[in-house]
Amino acid sequence: MPLYFASMNVASIRKIQKRDDDMVRFTRASRFRSVVTAIGGAGVLALALAGCGGDDSGPTTGSYGFPQVAQDEKATITVWVDADRTKATDAFKKAHPEVPIEVVTYDGSANGSNSFRTKIQLFDRAGSGWPDVVFSTQNNDAAWASQKSNGKQAFAAELSGGLVAGETLDKFTAGALNPCTVEGKVYCLRNDLAQAVFWYNKTLLDQFGYQVPATWEDYQALGEKVAREHPGYIVGTVGDAWTPEVFFWGSKCQANGITGPKAVTVNTTTPQCQRAAGMLDTLIKNGTTPNISVFTPEFVQKYSGKVLTMPGPAWYAGAIFNNPESLNVPAGQLGVAAPPAWRGEEAVTGNVGGGTWFISSHSKNLKAAETFARFATTADEYQVQVAPGYPAYAPAAEKWIAKQESSGYYATDLKPVVTAGTLIWSGWGSGIFSQEAIWAKTITPALADGKSLVALLPEWQTAIKNQAQVDGYTVQ
Image (cartoon, rainbow, N blue to C red; front, side):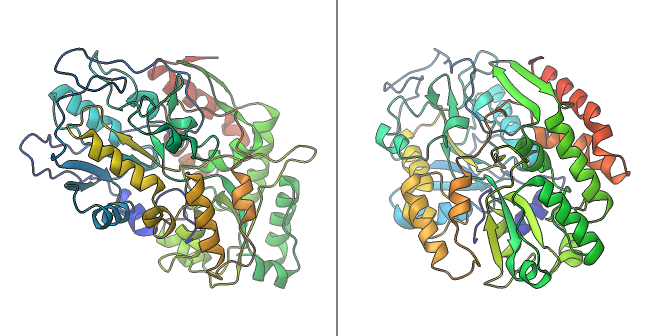
């Protein structure tokens, strides 16, 4: 936005789309080299999983709730970030020149690549090489990072046992740390929030004489009207892996109901799922909701100046609208509204990303690692002055909103962005498996072949069930 909640810009997304992960060049001899791409998961709610355990071998110090190696406050900390979070490391170096830090860039596990987990598993087997702090674009990582791996110590350090001050944790926006919380213990800090909202071009809506839709039924009617009266203009997209989080989560589709440590309820044939699929089938067929990713040159070429509305995460503003590498919508045109409701119901929304910071339980310099993670999530120097997304830390969020509104870029105020954070439906959970990866593998290519979403719902359910079972879930 600058309003870019989830964590990626066009340049970094295009890099991520490359198959080869040319991430790791560790300068330390103990670092383990690895280039891996795999499938992982995303989600947002508190996890009812087994608690973090520890390996009793090796020396321990301190009392944060996990085994610790001997500490060295002069030791360099290694921080993994995606391309966008390098700004956080730059700000930290400026604010804390006394802390030695080595920065390594990787894909941030974007789009469910699961690279974070896969690399940590390699280090677990090697018994060395763990980074001290890791940023992930995903919200599901606490589900595995808080657990022992093959009987060995969990990667994620418990933060709520005294490593991070309780008054700091208490100042995060209510619910922001739910994805980081396992059996009442906090294992990560949330970077930003990514609730879905309703973006629209106010200039175009006024020019065409259209109203912002209050319901999803109104939204479908708008798409049908646009197809007739202004062909070539669009009201949304289904080309990205987080489509289910935007449309199906916001329709209370029971595709991802995490009900226990290893239990999930999956039913994609409910009326709530069918109504979202039916609406999208209509809009896909008439061309107003194309199956094209917003992070592709094709999208920019075809739809610059043609995006009338766009349901999507709060970070879309900075990622695609107020971005010279993408749609580059001029100042004074972009408006935002609360997500539509289904007729007769209260509005709810999904959540697309947000980003999380983990501290390694293996760190030899927990003091410096905590200083960095706390700075990256709470400090004005980054979260208010530099970060493109709506901060999860409430004091920073308030200042960030004021800064954005003073910019004069938006055609409306940003209150809907703030209030939408309270509308996230609790029926989706934070399992290990990735809904985004499942959707991208199962549904996106089928839509490209012209298949109906309604007809694909049983296939989607089967794909979710199969992946959940592979990850050890009991599926109901």
